[in-house]
Length: 237
Image 1: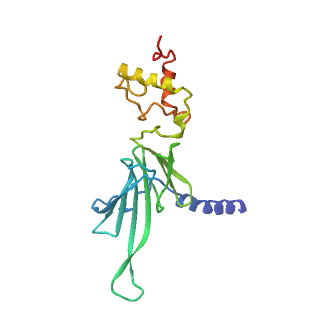
Image 2: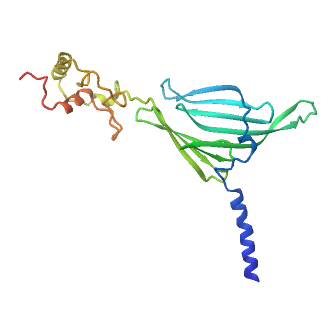
Image 3: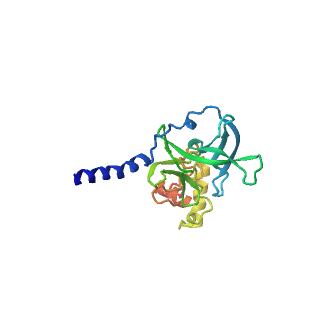
């Protein structure tokens, strides 16, 4: 009998853990099936890394028939996050007839691989990943439940990311003498090449061939030309 009672108590204690644990698929609230959203305003945010690129845009919506509101977050052109809020009316403490809205519940959603994951929290966490030059290249969105358990993690990469190696301290490593650098410039001009010694129609994935994905550093332009032309065709034979 004692063992049976102990088992029943243990089960009772375990039930709340299962009931209240964050459930990414819990979208039974009518706020998620609401269709009558009216856009109120939107705002765009730059990456704050010295570039003119917009990292994210948030658009706010209200519902004229309910006390619901929604915000949609677009990161690097992809709709990644939605936030929902349910309000209730609260009488002003001074007894004025005007009634104010008070937050009743909040939810956050993050999309990954075509699935929207849901948690009853105010918002997910954002983390910005930067390259060696301080440019934001990825934003990581982490959705956690109210107990701090991770529900889903989404990485959104910058689509137009190009690295500029010009003018950086790292590009002044070349030990080539000035006279040979001039020979390289003359050879490039004579053969109708681009400034890297490659055909003029060459397209580089990051906007420059001088950036190393492995080291995260730039090499000098003349060193790049030398690496690809060890026979030094610019020298007089």
